[in-house]
Image 1 (cartoon, rainbow, N blue to C red):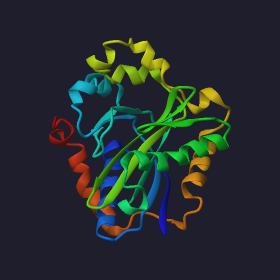
Image 2 (image 1 turned 135 degrees about the vertical axis):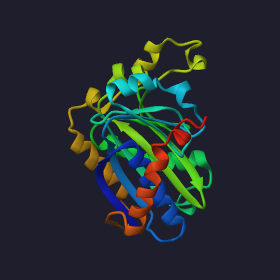
Image 3 (image 1 turned 180 degrees about the vertical axis):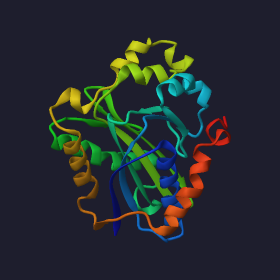
Length: 246
């Protein structure tokens, strides 16, 4: 049976610590497979575990604007998480719950997003390896890691896009900029509120429905062991040694 953790709001370090704590608990068979939904407060930038913070993020601008930054355990690229502009999900479960093929498992999990967007009147499609797009523009991106027999996949669904802030704190790499101006990146994303007139709460309910349908589930919270582990891990995710390790 799946545990569902309803929409919550946390700091960047807390969000990363929660995912890692749940993954560790599931690997020990001490917790149920889990789907959770969350926001970030304050706004934050997360980078993939193989990226360099100074290569991807203007940390000075982040600090001036009160925006946090953190390294994820998952791969993928740098992401700006606006406190009011997105919903983030995590799916954390034993590997056998989804395809052994990573590309196919992305498709399986992202299909929930495609279905949820359809329910609110937005036609979208999965774009390998880990994006959901609307008319060629990215509305959702995801990242995944597999450790100790557990999949952790998390990703964002853009509700509102604050492009000016997003591209003031993110540094598109020289490779990306070699043949495309920054404007093309701004034009390459879209958001729910730009396409249809639904509230953020309506988007959340659509996502909740599609992620949980046909799954035996219950609504729960972190257990005491997970909470203790989160408190231990927060120091890791605020540390310079972790966030600037590359």
